[in-house]
Image (tube, rainbow, N blue to C red; front, top):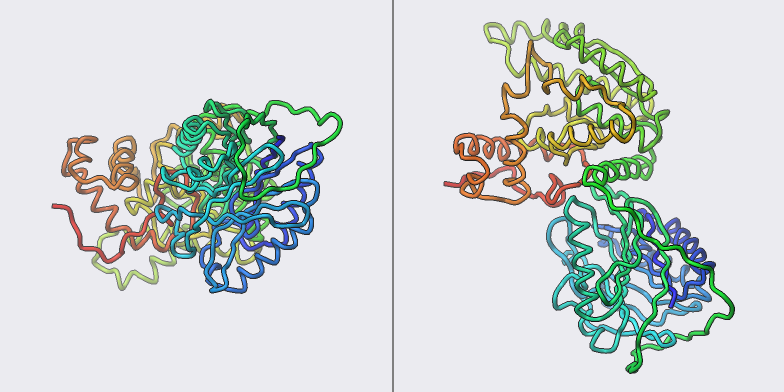
Length: 556
């Protein structure tokens, strides 16, 4: 049995384009002699459609798109994800099994995840049956994402009914620990149940989520025999030799005709493993590209300060949409050092991007002048510092409004966590590329880029102590712990919801930890007003972080 996994990049709500791409990949699979082609979860409508599922007309239009796809299926069996609906209007996360313009069966997802970024119990009702299908001598079961993660998922019933192949449609978003966890689980499922597992995962960016693809075919010994490219569309083909001497009667028998002649030869389809830094880098590139392109933008504009964060965002933007579509604006003030000023210009030259330098001192002086009477007798403080950041934000938005460019913000996760960012200042923009990247990891990825890409990011940018340059000789460590101390604490508190007692195992300084917790809790009002950004860690400030702004709970 030759099976193809169509690891495709769909767009939520673009029913026509999703359908056309599915037909294109199905025909490619057919040309390669595939008997079955498998698509990811919710291919027809894109994943996750969120509250579009409350629009009854959206569900009906997605079913129309499925029917249109069905009319294109001939000479191959297709398994594709969509949203189904019963006569009472209840929605199901579903997969259709199609052959020769006919739907032979539909699986409704049983296990509806309701944690992290998932809200499926908000939208769907759970399925109740676990049919198995037969094509020739091959008996297979179809299930969807969480159905195979749960220990008591419907895959167990499918195996009991005689399935020797489990086909799993998935839309599993990327985070730094997911790849290994996913592969380990699927290999265990295959070996424990003595079955092949064919896992079709989506790929692409959708708002803050990035789907990494990395579809898998695992044999009954628990060995990966084929896998999809990370962060790219792919068509994975593999021949399965299914031992099925005592085949039980399947619930649904799909007509099958042996192909005559030699099938096209298949190359071994196993991707090379990647380091964590490379995966994060590719995830950020893909997430940025799809956010920009899928939302109809052509160019982006970045405030290029000469610091590490804006340097990394500029590189990612160039890789995502091309250097000709990236504009950098340096906005030096009286506190900007000659080093950062020249580094910004040199970096733009290294990348080959359009570059503007717009000094902000005269605008800042105008603010001081109009506020001098109101601020009389008060020492300069964060108010004057934040005015500079807001001036820069206004300039970036002026370019955005004038030319239709998307502003990419440059703040990292460490800054967002403790509120070391300015509302309507450096937080201004439409998309926060490194919002979920801790500061220490920003440096790691910058070093990786310099090794891989040939030294784009200047050594002085990497070695210079981080500073916002909003006052004379300012350094981040004036207000924050060193990032190599801060980031482990943030990982414990934000990503793992650790208690103070557990965090003391990371760092014995109780006052330091309490201060970090206070900063994180107090800054929730800022994060709520931040632009969306790409999720790459276990828990990002977005869909899977839902703490109240008004919150008086303090751990004793």
